[in-house]
Image (tube, rainbow, N blue to C red; front, top):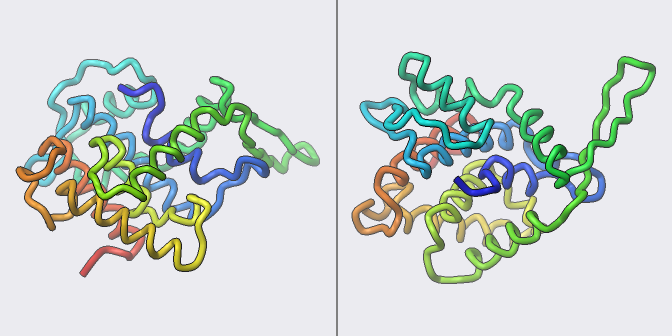
Length: 226
């Protein structure tokens, strides 16, 4: 697996570097992050989609603690739909990812707890290297006519599904244009049915998992395409 998980990348996009606070839709971010863990496991060849359910094809650990915890849950549980897993996994996931990024020195945990019981934490950027690379990669995808690699295409699809375009430092007409380009990437990758998965450079097994998870996010947010 990549040294930076997709869920971590979504979180870094969503949190303001200076204030350390989440921007945009919190529910959209949480749903997107839950789906992102499952997508990473599909990219690593651990999960697939079959018979309407997320299924395990390889239960061996990936070496990434959060992903492996989720993989263990899927292995131990009865099969569930993508929509069910996204809802099951979103609770508490953000705190886990924040703690991991802080432990690695990427974010800084600023504890502003007051009166001993009102817990307030901010997470400003401590090391911008990872986020800079991430934004550069997404920026290239947004401005190029070529389909990015499958991991970046999956990230683009999750950003669009969670409606996180404002986190790309865009506003007004730029947001609409970015959303359109992100959806074009999703279409070209075979995530939405606009292009046959066999015609895409994305592995069909991965494209299918991304497709059903994107639909689960959009359905939960009430933004699914008609």
